[in-house]
Length: 322
Image (cartoon, rainbow, N blue to C red; front, side, top):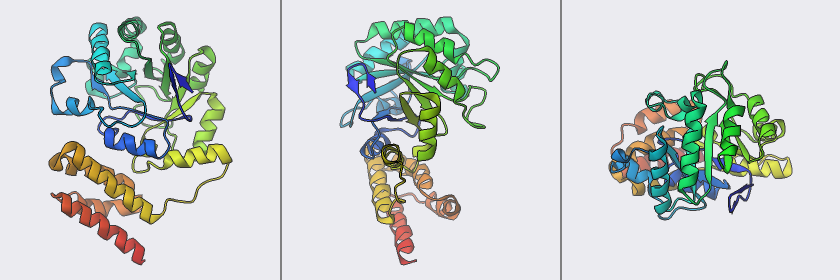
């Protein structure tokens, strides 16, 4: 798939997820075969850019792969300025968020709330595309509510405004993350526009990935929650798409190495105090459901880097002995 001058090596993209797809996570997914990883959402409000959280999200030094940075907001001028600033910081693609269902975002009439206002959607897209000389992509949902699925209309506006590629989550804002993603709207969007379309939502297995590609006819897949604690899902899906065969489950030793490396990179990125707290949720995702509760209860009480590393090592030593 092509996005502006950038040719993606395959059809698999890491979805932007606030508090998850930081540089440590993105680089790990890229190493396991994702063609591109989109950064965490960054507010277009310059008043918050000097916060530690925003500074972390604007960090691109040492970034692997194509640097795609997602911005969110409702004001065309602020969005255009945010795009310019992030390109100056090293962004190679600007992604616009019109898919986030979070209340704190929607209260500002940003994220998926914008799907209610096609006129404002057009104004924002035109402003951002005109402001930068890098490709601009867009992420949306299928609509605001099940009875208001206007994804095709928004997609056509996006194409007319010069958007280079469109990612679509198969739920409306009202659905949040409940129920099952639906792909018929994504299929209709693909049929009605000529720019690349990327399907997102509930793509957790290689089999589901193949189904979504075949059902919708999209150009690529965007994987979010399916990669939490499973960065190797990109390798598994790509192998299945290429061969029709499933890879064997990840070996215990590899899982150990990945978890420990991920923890090390979180500490390096955030410092020990914040890194320890981010590590808690990531480690929980790496564990099987039946393992999570007792391990996490103890792990979440640990307050030092050394304690966290030792507990992960002990966990895998016990598995090796069984």
